[in-house]
Length: 91
Image (spheres, rainbow, N blue to C red):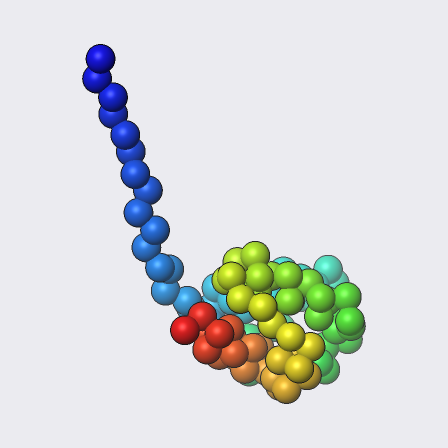
């Protein structure tokens, strides 16, 4: 009897700002995704609220395997700041 096994090799995915911006902007229902770029001060977006903050925390956990805190959200100013914090937590 012959057995064949396939093994998945986990290769760390390079984190890209553009991918994070896309994932971040998808948390909004009414905000035009083209308005969200790395330098966007996300707290000034009309739709930003505590529920979206929780969605972003869940996004970081599910897609990047890191735990953002409320302080991380409060201390970041731009989408890029959040991305850099996630990268720092991945190390």
